[in-house]
Image (cartoon, rainbow over all chains, first blue to last red; front, top):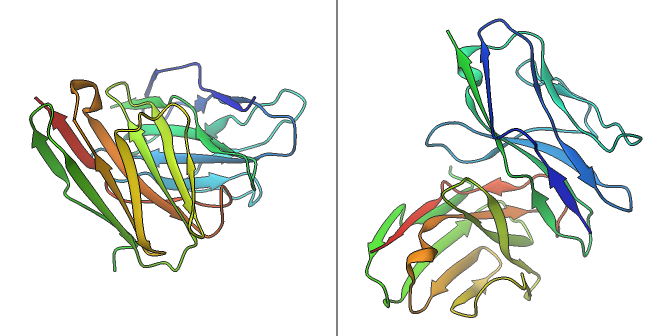
Length: 109
Length: 113
C-alpha cells in the first residue's frame, strides 16, 4: 500500500542552522514525490518535485530509491521558512495522491 | 486571477444542518479534488473527480456528496453535520488524475457546534 511517513511533527531550529525534514515512502512502482508548503493562513503550494531537481528558496530534496526517502534540506534556515511542510506521493493513473502527516518547522531568531 | 477559489472561507453551523462548499478552478484542469485537514493538520483525500468520473475515498461517510456541474466546478455538500466534521476543507485541481502539481484553494474552515 502507498504510504508517506513524516516522523517529526515539529522541528525547531535556530536561524542560520541547517534544516532537514524527513520523508519516507512506501510504493511498489515508480512514484512521483513532492514537497508542499503551507505558510500561516495561506493555501498549500508546491515547493518542489523530485523530477525537476530544482532548488527552490534554497531547499533541495533528493529521491533515494534505496532508502525510499525524499528528505527536504536547506543549509541555512531563515525565519520566513517557518511553515507546515507536507511530503506527498503520486503514483499517477489509478493510484491516489497522498500526503504525509506534515512537519511544522519553526525557525527561531 | 485566482486559480482555485472556494466559498465560503468560514462556516459556522449547528449539528444536524446541511451545508455546501463551492469550488471553482480557472486553470482548465481535468481533475478536481476535495481534501480534509483535521485539527492535527493531517491532510486526507476525500474525493477525486476526473472527466465526470467520481472516485470516492472509502473512508468518507455518505453524508458527504460532491457535485460537479461542469469541469471547472466541484462542490461539496454535507448532510446532517456532526461535530467531527469540523475541519478545514481544501479544494484542489490538477491537469490529470493523481499526476503533477496540485493547485489548492485557500480552504474553507467549517465549525460545527
